[in-house]
Length: 128
Image 1 (cartoon, helix red, strand yellow):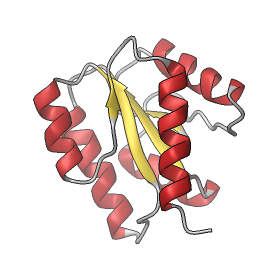
Image 2 (cartoon, helix red, strand yellow):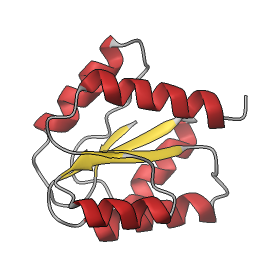
Image 3 (cartoon, one colour):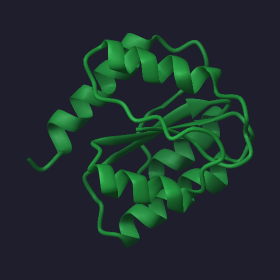
Image 4 (cartoon, one colour):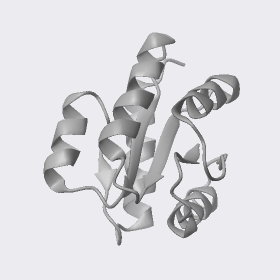
């Protein structure tokens, strides 16, 4: 699932990633703009997704990712990858990784690398 959280209205990157993941053989749900963390987690639960990718350019990454991670844990969802990308400083990426967020991708990341990362993580962590 690819999501845009908050008031960030720049969704070109999210649409590019969603299309690239679909073209690589994944089933992709794009939530659209202006989702809340609660909406994202509820959709992930309803759709039984393997991964959530959040695209964020607004600078709210240190609020959005911890909130989504907290909601996932609160609902007992421990085998869903939370990943994403956008304008996120390296030190913030490290801090988010420490709370359980997966690899985060900067603008210009190869879509094949993103797809490979998701596939590998899901293969290693999902309870089938």
